[in-house]
Amino acid sequence: MHRATRGPAGRTRALGALAQGALLLGGLLLLAGCTATSPHPPSATRTSTPTPSRPTPTGSSTPIAVPVPGITGWSSYHAGPSRTGAVGSGATLASLGRAWSADLGGAVFGQPVVAGGRVIAATETNRVVALDPGTGNVVWSASLGAPLTDVGSAAGCGDIDPLGVTSTPAVDTASGTVYVVGEVSTGGGAVHHQLEGFSVATGQVVLSETVDPPLPAGEDPVHLLQRASLAVANGRVYIAYGGNYGDCGAYHGWVVGVNETGAPGLVSFEAAADGQGGAIWQGGGAPAVDAAGDLYVSTGNSNPDPPAGGPDPVQYAESVVKLSPDLKPLAAFKDQGAGGDDDLGTGNPVLLPGGLLFVAGKTDVGFVLRQSDLSEVSSVSGLCGSDPDGGAAYDQATNRLFVPCRGGGVQTVDLGAGRLGVRLAGANGAPIVIGGSVWAVEYPGGTISQFGAATGAVLQRVPVGDAVPHFVSPSTALGVLLVGTDSGVVAFRGGG
Image (tube, rainbow, N blue to C red):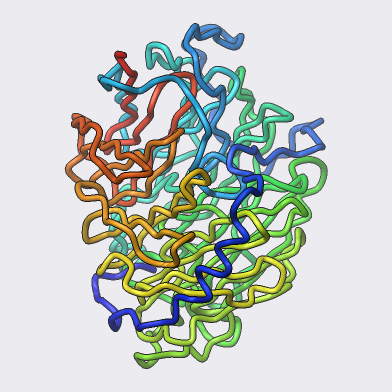
């Protein structure tokens, strides 16, 4: 899990291979706008105890027609399974102005998602809502149960309180179901993690399942933080886990998957099985999913911290791991220079054209790997000068990556030239790309900025108007730009 301490400075690596590997990117189609869908829509409700409260309708139960141009959906973290955070076009967002704000009574750490003409957001109070994208009015609302409070006393550490839904939900667009996972208190400091599937149109509960990993004896779900965003693929919902801020208690990084229909059929992958740690939290990013349905996750350091300088001796710690649909390891890459608290898992892997992927961690080194076997193609050092935190965005038109820097700025990586580009000042949250513009938020103060993807020039900068959570990342659809805040959701619309 992310800590305040810094690892060693990023080491120098050869860049020639990066330029050579990056040439594979030109002219190939990017999967950026794809949505992760399931060919098997839910046919029956599967429930387990406890079941969440029924949704409270506060408007029409039929989908809302919104007379604004632009893309119609944002189904999961960074738009789709490749996690590029890029959409090719949308409504103009020039002369950006605040359209509406929705006070939901709790912090929204994940990206709002959009499907079926609805904006769906989930809070740290375990509230899930569907909003009218034109007005911000609540269409339906539901609760997963009581969140954990007094987290530091219950878990021994942690910096989110109350602790409910922290990850970005994911939508199965084929069935019109949105999936959300929350940490639910059962009293006395005990918790479990609850997966709920809701009809986007009506808020009806279509799936309810406890999704704690198969923990070893002596370990407790209270020491797990479900920070990484959800993924939907292969007829399953995938949920990843790390530890709370401060790495208290015994825990491992996990990915679990459950069926959308029929019996749960839980499958799982455990990082650091020969030790502890290996958190899969990814700065809030989701597992990436390729066209074959294989998943890619990045992991943090073992717990307690291994010696500085690396490599981390624990299996699958400080690694990118490729997993089959049933979560069997297919390949792994370990950052050999990551020791101490260097956390390769501060951001999710991003799938690139040409069968490549990109990942970066707190050694401030970005790696380009082959998706097939996770062998290293190239690397570039000196990213950010501070921890890269959250999912990078990729713009195919300029062949550039945009990496969020916790200490300030968004670092440009020019893949074609094989070198670092300019650092975009004034934002530190995970960026997205809309057409030829990069959009990113500065946290915790709350300012959203638009940059030219080709030039890095600041095009506009607008106050959000509310404080925003760590690693906040905007989303867009139906002509609005959406930002989660410490109290709900703010929407912006272009005026020109």
